Length: 434
Image (tube, rainbow, N blue to C red; front, side):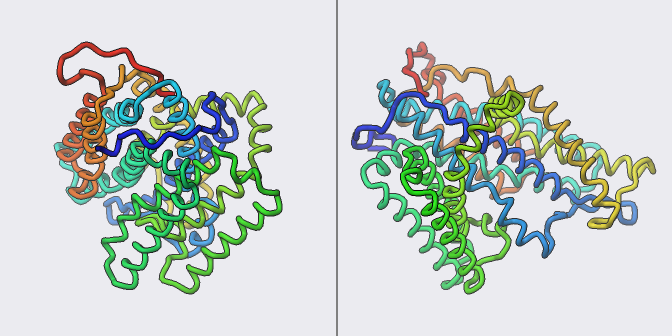
């Protein structure tokens, strides 16, 4: 038996394809916010003729702001909402779990191959051009930062068939068990002073938050009165605040993401409650043609935008340094009046460049990955290879060698996810994978 064995069948709530535009809107909004936040983090100055790269948001005032702009839990909730609907439709059509997982791995790691190869080529070019090693290392580290999402999201998606079955049988117990696992890891991390163990919550915390998306898909919160949902959101936020004030948790919600903590899960629960209150308004917002066009454009390129926005930011920062060293573009001191005055223009430039890059590279995401494999061991190895490509980057660090190696693992994941791609057999006709 593998993790892709078919879970106990229950009657799915509604296997029909029902697209909830409120989820599309919030996912697009979260993605735009991620790009803008990462753009705001770019702090580049030139000191004594050498570039200095800093996180411009590593300041005391950002901690309270982070509670309002930490949207990764909501992004995973939207992912869980979409994934369980896709799996239920596929299951109703006769698709096997391994087949569904293979399709997911192919779609996720296909676009990643090109990004990793591009990053590897860029870092190699910097090295060959004689750029100081510490600057190349800094660029690699910055480029690697958003990649955690790819690995964690892929693992979460691979476990959807199992976790969906668990949710359908015992929804409260499933969510509670994952939440309890997060708490146990936090206790071991803080009380037993085992900081490394906290990274187990890269699995437990994000799986718990994805599970919240399953609850959203079932409409469980909508069954509650508006007042009850508002009280729930306030209670969860209050619990998170109490843990921060009384415990070892950081006040900065992005610090609570690395590694994830119980506070982040509580924030995710509050965001789900608030999202349930906002869904009617979000659906009405989508009815406006301009908003619908933007949301649809982003939705068709979501993974492309996420994967390519950081290389675009690093490239823009590098160009800014070259212009500054050449005397064409003075770089203001971080957080100075001049720095703040240039932020609107900087953010606008980032959005324009990321939009152009996403338009040019979206074909790698839209390209059909072919018929997915329905063989369990292939789906399992595809998941291991794909997630392993990200683990490699974080364990060994991102340089041109590890970037190429990670691309090789991603290629392996894509090929394993295809039916017969490594054994030379003809592709088998596949059921829909939703």
